[in-house]
Amino acid sequence: MISIIIPTLNEEKIIQSTLILLKTKLTISHEIIVSDGGSEDQTTALAKTYADSVLVYSGATRQTIAHGRNEGARAARGDFLVFFDADCSIEDPDAFFTQALRHFEEDKKLVGLTVSPRVLPEFETFTDRIMFRIMTWGLRLRNNVFHVGEAMGEFQMMRKETFYAVNGFREDLVTREDADMFYRLSKIGKTMLDPNLTVFHTGRRAHTVGWPYLIVAWMINTLSVL
Picture 1 (tube, rainbow, N blue to C red):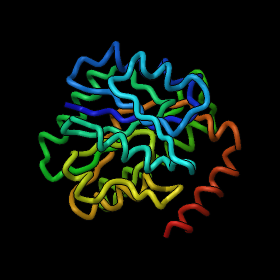
Picture 2: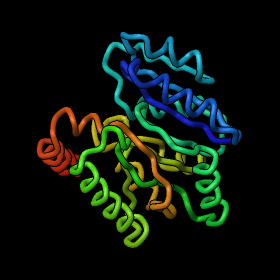
Picture 3: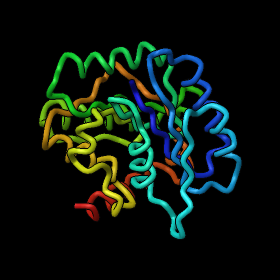
């Protein structure tokens, strides 16, 4: 079974459509876990209608996304964990996950799978198209050629036992926890990017702050984590 873990924080504008797509079009054995960081809007109410499990953080300090993902993983019953962002979607979930599972079945050394990220066509700009193509090629080279794991948070799939073998996401990191996870996974097995599988997202962060600012922020965050 696949456990799809979605961390959320005030996602009432998008979470319903994300969950409906998975709930109605994915027939492969799965469960949907929403790990909420303490939303103040209707996120959890909407999630409870469609998700199999909704976890709500009630700590005094703000929850990191790494902690939210780890909480979801602890509640998961599946053999495979899929970490999926709240604003993401897949065109044909059955075909997508059939292919994803096939990779793990055919390669027992595979511990982590990621895919091509792309902005939804209705929101995609020319710059989005260029930037995400560059990032996809970069991630493909790192994982498939140089065997140095890295992946974005939009989609990460891994065996449950390897998730625990590397002790999950680092909760002390407030950024780049997604890349760090795949880097550590690549130390104990094989990670890969399948360029034929695509996960769509809204591109909202780049559209809000602009690509120049986002690129600089990523560079600073990467250096900080290193």
